[in-house]
View 1: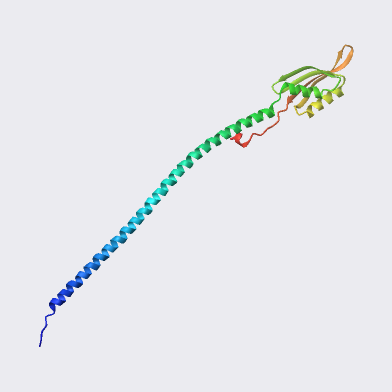
View 2 (view 1 turned 30 degrees about the vertical axis):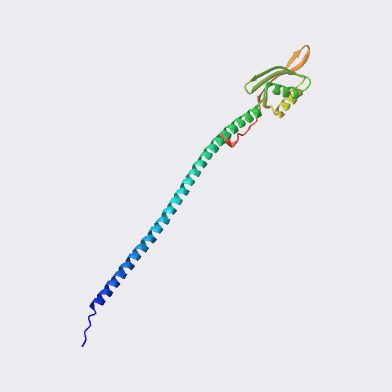
Length: 190
């Protein structure tokens, strides 16, 4: 029988197989490293892009905050101007003066009724005068009550007086200046 020693071939094949396995393993490790490094680089790029987006958004936010600050200042100034205009409008609407009150008084005074005294104390007015009869006094009181200038007309005294041989009625009236009620705007209430 012939004996062939195949051990060196097996050992060579084992060495060759082991070398192939080491190469495959090393190639796999290198391939895995390349994939991991490429993914890591890709993620670093995404992170850098996200950071740039965040910085751009923060810059835009700061710009908008500055605009909002300016807008708030403009709104505050607008509210202050509105309050001042409301006060001016209220003053204009409440504006009454002796000239307008006396003009109204002159317009509602009937003929044959004479005013002797006019006194104004705050919003309280007192008038003294002479009339030919009581009907003229009553007509005068109704006209004062109907006027937009005066309210709460009260007859304090009505008595007969002899003036140069003519019997006249002397009277004293008190009443208040009517102030129109003007509501302030919601901005002025704040």
